[in-house]
Image (tube, rainbow, N blue to C red; front, side, top):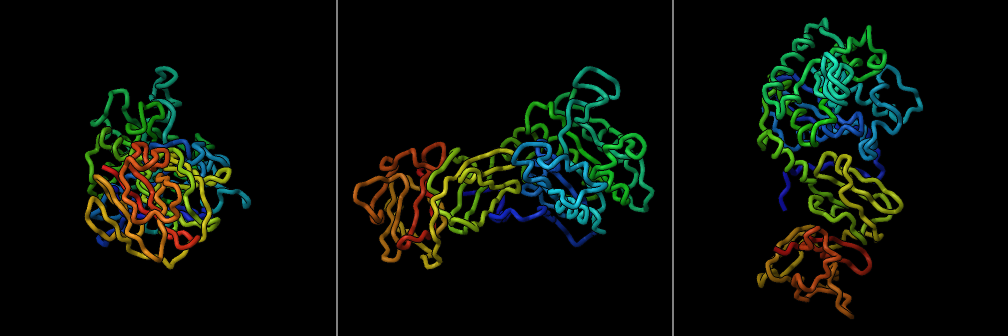
Length: 428
């Protein structure tokens, strides 16, 4: 089974991580762009763009740091903030505030001497226009803007001319619009004098600490998520160009290619003995063999997350619930075979114990005295161990398939009453 990337992100069952910081670094320079997304959980254009930066971009010169999901629990809920507006807590955050640890850690990251410029990614209402042109196109809108808190920072660093940089970004982006009314502009909130709410924000914390900072706001009124991500990435690339950060990506930057990437949800590994492909998975799977507590979840997607709801594990990619797992609790054993013997389409092969394998006609698991086999969806009478049984697609109940196409099924291995591992069989 092929995925876009091989980097795995560990999510402990206790969900005790504060922030996820991914660093793509080179030794040629300390110049570093810090991209922060997901401060508002209902603004997916920003955090899905950040996830693509992690999975589909290679940085070949200078440095890119990415926090794709700053407010991860609000992302799951698809809400601006479940503990209030996180972007209004950077001037002061109360000791008992549930966002405090995240705020403190991201502040420390921002203030790192290596960080040269900060981007905060958002989706905003409407389309910003300097003159009122209706309820969607007006000066109070935030969408399709490069937001700055002031025109300049009095610093020796090369990126203190905030207005000039924002104007350059605006002009570059506007040459590549999908539709003419998607045009970008610069929105200067003149925060110190005119905007008390923005005085509490992440970007204003940056500039008051002499860190050049901008917000990219794509419009919530764009036609789809792919368009929002397109403009976010377009703007981010222009910032990298200004900073001299060289990069490569493994796709063409257009709406169609972005849609393909967004539809790939990657994989979920559970306790190192289960690997689920999340891209074509059913909305609900039953009897997943896991431990009653202290399970280890690893996602290949940066926005992967787990939330236990009423005894079931809901699996999220960003704000999208892609499946729900109903657990069946087992003790796990390490005393299992690392390689397992099969006959697949008449040929004998050995497979690792969490492999995926592909079958044209049929397969069977060669019997082992050490482990018993349970093929989920095969329902013979009187079979405790389903090894040495030849299985074709027609022998399997499609209600037990993993995927929506009813072609992928689970092959589980047990040692007595303890769970060993799960393989996936794909029928072509």
